[in-house]
Amino acid sequence: MMENTLVVSFMFTLNQNRMKANELRIGNYVYDTLGKVNKIDLEAITYIVKEPHNQVKPIPLTEEWLLKFGFVKSKVSSQFDKEKLTIQIANELEYHKKGRVYFNSWAILEESIKYVHQLQNLYFALTGEELTFKSE
Image 1 (tube, rainbow, N blue to C red):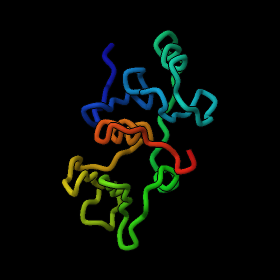
Image 2: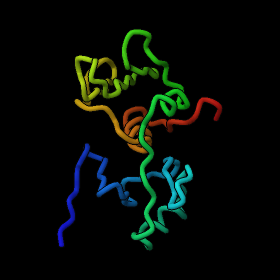
Image 3: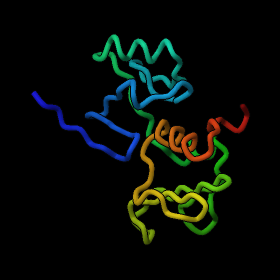
Image 4: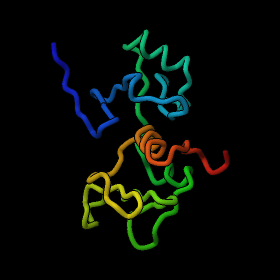
C-alpha cells in the first residue's frame, strides 16, 4: 500500500505527521512519543530508524519559538528577522498570505516554514551555523 507523502521543500518530508530519520539532524527539537520537547541526538535517530512505529512528531513553528531562537519581530508585519534570514509567518491579512522566507532580502521559499526542525535545518544549510536558543 502506497502512503501519501507531502514534500514541503527540498529537505523537508512529512508523512501524515510522522517524521523520518532522514529529516532530522542532531540538535533538532521535536515532540517525543509522550508529547515532550526533546533535542535529537544520535541515539534518537538510531531509535527512529529501528522502531519506525514509535515516531517523534514535528513541533509547529510559532512566534514563541522564533523569539527563543533570537528572531526579532517586526513592528509593522508578521515578519521575524535574524541576521540575513527573514521569516514571514502565514497571515491572512498580509499580502503573502501563506508567508515567505527571505535570505539576503531574496525570497527563497514562497510559503512559511511550518515546523521548528525545518527552520533549524534551513538555517544551518544557509549559514553553516546551528540555530540555538538565545541563552545557549
